[in-house]
Amino acid sequence: MPAPFTDSQDTTLVYSGVTYACTSIVRNAEGGGDLTDQKVDVSTLDLASGACRVYQNPPLQDCGAGGANGTRTFQIDFFGADEPTLNESATLVITQSDGTIFTGNATCTSCSSTWATGEVVSGSATFSVDEE
Image 1 (cartoon, helix red, strand yellow):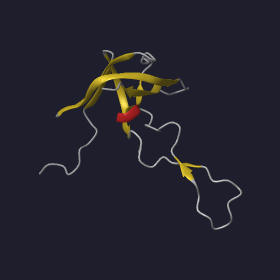
Image 2: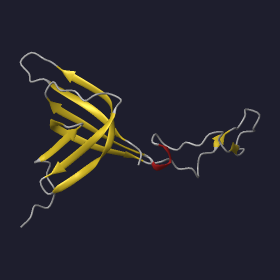
Image 3: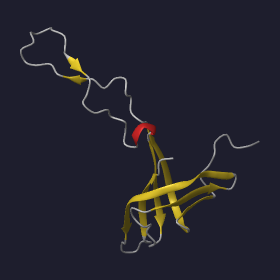
Image 4: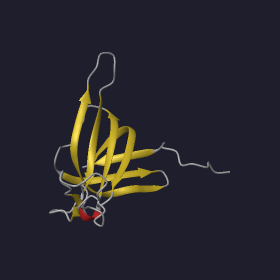
């Protein structure tokens, strides 16, 4: 009988041709913004108590962090001193034994390393998927 849930084991992440020894991969998605309900409250203090608020359309639409289609990011934790190059678009491939989870171009937007006494060098990085 197959397991009821997919486990994380046997997952690899390759970015710009470098394989990272990941201990955690978190996929995040942010919508493109709800353009139908972005009214600006322009109520003033001269309104009497109990009066209705006054709204108008905003001068700019909030389309979300990734524009009209939204944005996807991957936050990873890994072992090793190799850090992904910042601010350059490169191929990101995440696979598991039963197939590819993600493949596409992404940009490493942040990266950090931890070098601590008695510990293995570790790091974390965030990749923003390039708009398609």
